[in-house]
Image (cartoon, rainbow, N blue to C red; front, side, top):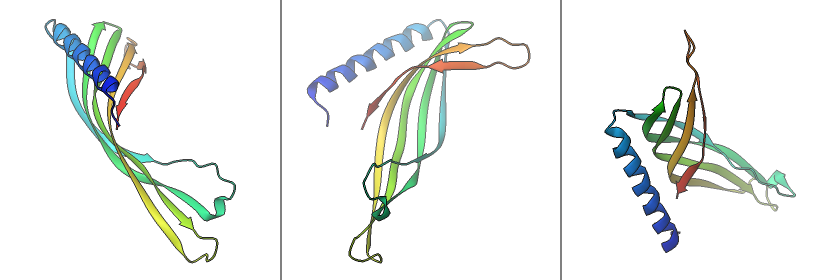
Length: 139
């Protein structure tokens, strides 16, 4: 759940990102785009007896609004807003009867705010970029 402190921190982060986007947008150094894709997520459990417990992956999707801010010719800051679905399928078999089971499907929806620093290479035929950075998660 959200606490008042988390809410204030997220407000500050959103205001900071908005100021950066509008400041750099005035110089024409920003690219905005959309992306979508699929996800396949699972979970790992450390239990004594795994014969009664099966976990299978669950498919989901993600939708992203991306902003790429060019800082210079070889460096950029990439951020955005992402909606991501994650989860897993779990089957639990009872000890008393191997034919009796219960299935649970876990659905988790997240809003993510990634912040990546990208380094671009300037090769003649192929351009690569490398990125590193955290992302902030709201569930």
